Image 1 (cartoon, rainbow, N blue to C red):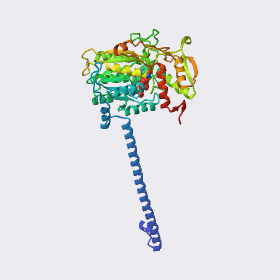
Image 2 (image 1 turned 120 degrees about the vertical axis):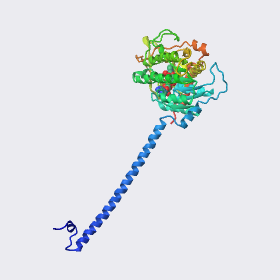
Image 3 (image 1 turned 90 degrees about the horizontal axis):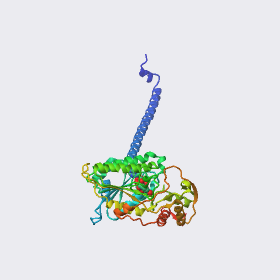
Image 4 (image 1 turned 90 degrees about the vertical axis):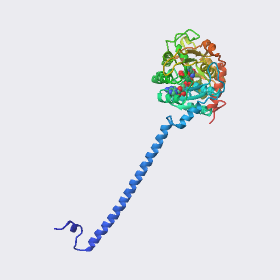
Length: 438
Ligand SMILES: NC(=O)c1ccc[n+]([C@@H]2O[C@H](COP(=O)([O-])OP(=O)(O)OC[C@H]3O[C@@H](n4cnc5c(N)ncnc54)[C@H](O)[C@@H]3O)[C@@H](O)[C@H]2O)c1
């Protein structure tokens, strides 16, 4: 029987066959050898590519993590530097030197208040989540402006209890100026939970942090004129009823007033709630009527003007941003101290509420005609009955409490304030004599 070896390597006939077989084998072997080398090379290249890609994704995810996050030596240094107090005078209406945590610092009011505090030498650290309720690039531009003035805005949410506690670990804030909120009346019908997230849950998280801080800061926060809801008695006074809100936004602000009261009562936190009346001005909010009217008039688009019951024009107590800033600073200066320690109240602390308005309501059609004059363009008006979406027909502030407490006196009328707004708008959005600059 032929062995397997004979089968493979027959002894007869001939070597040629064997040689040929050897040649084939050698070629096959060489071929196999080069294929396996190629295979190994391919494996090596695949491994190299894979490790490069995974390194890249590690770097990417790392930078994403770090940019969307907080912490680290450099970050703490930025917080500390921003909180540095540079004023030398000590006594101001019993207020003294301040280091203020400003929530919503990339927002309209927050950016103005932060700049004013820094300008007079107070320490300021901002926090903002840069949400996209309106164009976040406007918030980033405000952030850049603040950064040029030595103010650092931490990118984070007021619902992040760990972040808030960390900030209070780094800086013994004397005051919190709480302006972060989901603003806007009509948007509540689209995204009601955003109001609960920021105006209720976020507020409670912030108050929990403040109550446990040692020393406890004094808190000044933005409520809203919308708490007066469907009231018809004018002007609105702080002692008027506030139990008939017309929107979820108003309801969350009213709830904020009750929630802050309990933290004042139980934990001795000093609380001042400010009911702002339709704030407007440079760096304003794009969702507000004066802002979107300006945009539409410049673009030749129609504007929608709401009219109240019995064809009555809507009216607002429009308040210029600089007057609101003065009211915020006056409130901070006179806020009085919190009395709690180790999370426990040791005595009564101030609980105050003030209207911050202009005391001279102007109808919406008058607002439009002032804008037309400043823009030197006619508006295409689409006048319709006010839908039941949360708006109220008029607002009018009685400001005697704020005047009495910290000499609050608004000085800018709508005509002057809108002129400043329009000048800012045209330059920020790149217009030259009403024409966009390309
Ligand atoms: N502008 C007005 O006419 C007016 C009137 C009455 C009351 N208010 C109140 O004044 C305050 C400031 O208003 P504004 O006009 O500057 O609004 P804004 O929207 O410009 O500013 C609010 C800022 O808070 C931030 N923010 C929202 N939720 C947050 C969260 N959970 N964590 C961190 N940041 C968050 C937003 O990104 C925004 O930058 C708000 O509380 C608002 O309700 C404003």
